[in-house]
Each structure stands twice: as C-alpha cells, then as structure tokens.
Image: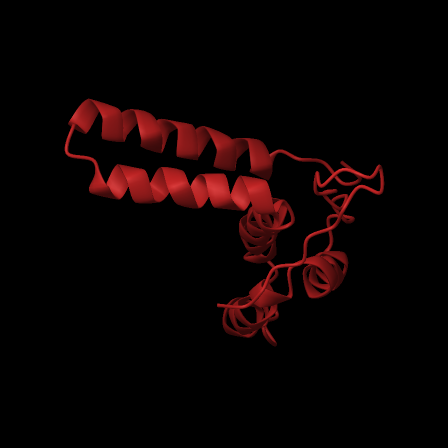
Length: 121
C-alpha cells in the first residue's frame, strides 16, 4: 500500500486540509494527482494510454475525466476515502440486505457528491 499525503490546515489542529480541485483538464488533473494523490498516478497514466493514447477520436475524454475527477476528489481527502472504504467493507460483510443496501446507498451518494465538486473547491 502506498502512503497517502495528509495536509494539515495550519491552525494547530490535526484536521487535514483538503487541496482544492484543479482545472477540469487532463493536464491539470494529472498534476494534482501527482502532487496530492501519487498512489493514483500509475493507474491514471495506464488508463490514459489505453483509453486515449494516440487516438484521433476525443469522444472518450469526457468519460475519462469524469472517472478520474471523482477518484481524485475522493483520494485528496483521506477521511472521505477511509469512510468510503469502510462503507464498502461493511456492506460486503453485512448479512442484512436492508442494512447492506443502506450502506451502499450512502457510498453511492458520497461518490456522486465527489463527482460534482467544482474546480477550486
């Protein structure tokens, strides 16, 4: 497991500071991942080469950006990433279908919220 960077807000507390989202471009997103979530970089670059690479058709770029925008929005906030991982693990072990569905609904809601974060937020 690769260590994830934790940024402290500078107020003397231990509350992590979440870096702002970059511009919504592949280059800006790659730089943000490199700086704040380097554990994602190998998968980001491999996916870029596989899905976009030297393609002359840019149709897959918006879907690529949406996926990695969401992944970075989650990874830049260690508390959110840990909470999502916990929800997923609890749902996988849960024997009560209603409880499991509730956990997965919360997981999905938080991922949708992460996907909606705007540049600079």
